[in-house]
Amino acid sequence: MSRSVAVQAPLFDALGDPNRLRIVVGLSEGGPSSTSRITQAIPVTRQAASKHLQLLESAGLVTSVRRGRERVWTLQTEQLAQASDYLTQLSRRWDAAVDRLRAFVESDPAG
Image (tube, rainbow, N blue to C red):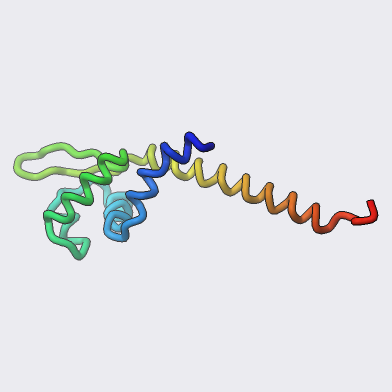
């Protein structure tokens, strides 16, 4: 799981910013979108939005294609599915640890 942490860290780092998370939510709800349209949906300049999009792209969460003068961004759901799987594994480990603790606490100390 420690290798998974290193692999997943950039993705969760990218999602940790509220504006980047808004971008991901917007793309998941509305489908592919231009930089201009994305910029209108978040409270930042076009330059700041471009930086957020580049970071999301480097984390593998979005891809882009050039259409004329615009760049159109598409959400890469595979990355989100991997993150979901990772969180599910983490949750199972946590649940198992809590179950072990509960069993220990509830065990008969007399043996």
